[in-house]
Length: 290
Length: 290
Image (tube, rainbow over all chains, first blue to last red; front, side, top):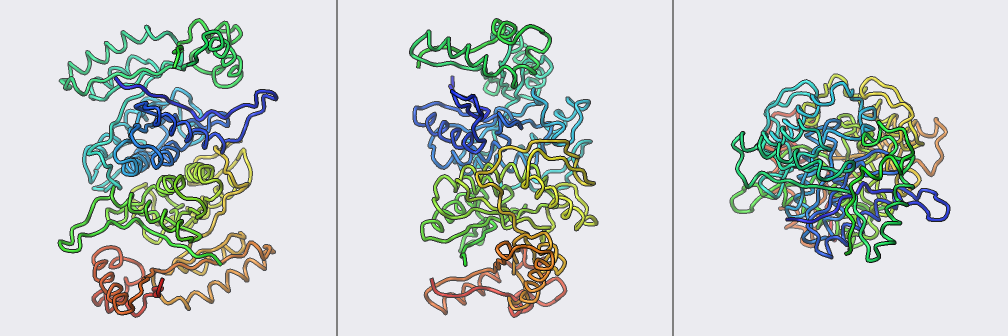
């Protein structure tokens, strides 16, 4: 088992005034966090793509590359890359470059996008939500499999015997399928033989057990080798020596995020009551001592 | 005056077999070169976007970010970003992230593309060569000027009051216009008030003096402040203590590059004779002692 952390490069708030800090500080804080995670021996650090002032990690591979030069062992990944609204060629180029610069520590977790702010920003329609993802994942896997690449699709110009460079240090980049819990995504990861990463930002962890079972069954039916069938789970986490202080921090965190991304997220959208009462009981968070 | 170096992350050849090395090694060699340039006190390092196995620096901001963490003073730029075939939003996000991670040392040099391999790779037509560039440069400058951004154009989906994050550490990113010597580009940089960077990879340096004059005149006619009127020149360079060894290295370099990018470049295209004789007399290279 591997243990790691992911971050959306959250911009910090001043604890007195509540004012948001700078997005540039958030980039530097995140690099420092990755270096610390490496120093204390965690296995993995993931940076999640978002495009809001509060969560400005829009260029994850750039952040991870800055950390690559000052870390030794930790794996550096996206959590997630919103593949549906990006170009698989550019994504591959960036992560292959990261892989070279980290001596083979890069990973991609490719998601459809549970936040949808990147769709209008890059001119995509939510009507194509799944088709965009399926097609772009197909291209990303093809680039990873061999070069040069010939490929045709609806949502990206065709490639005709095109080299995509640089090539990664690892023979193939590890590519995970990231999902918020849609059953179809679990089946897709299974039959494609991809490791799966469940981003449990809403709902209890136990709700994901049948999905992981669905994933494993699909993979076995597709004849995928056992070694390639891998499951990752991620939840918000609160770590602290003092249990009471830790619980206060959980509550304060829910208060602070009210009005930002929790309010509009798909997790709570169907419930009209105030955020704490409507989300807290359904909210999965890892709590414990260091 | 500032002094710097640019690189296309050239993949090294084995001096005996002539075999090309790995693109991943080229990424790491380039980071080492940037760190050395910083250590010896150069002012600037530029990474040029290309998409060939021999020149695999396709994700410049990722390479530069890895160097940002191990350098102190050197400015880190693109030389050039092929803006015509990229998305100004993504380019800005990457370089603003780099700017944060380097504490304000990032620059963009935006070019139309003197090599054209990125046009088929990203599905653009050379028929739109100049219109693509004009439109995307307009958007890039608008993002740099203020946020949120509202923008409409032909070659990129519109933006409606969209934030582009993160914001750079510098109030505005320095954006240079990169050109191979087209008079119209010099005038464009002048009237837009952008600093200009001449990439002199073919032709003698003196041929560029009238272009710089054209640039300065256009800028003054547009009322651009003198402080913003800046000219950069870049040529291949050969530095060594021993003059004879240095000249041998110039000739060997021309031999080696025969069959790769020099052969097909626009500099020599009209001339049918073998590469050394057809290019050497017209070829500008900086030669000198360290």
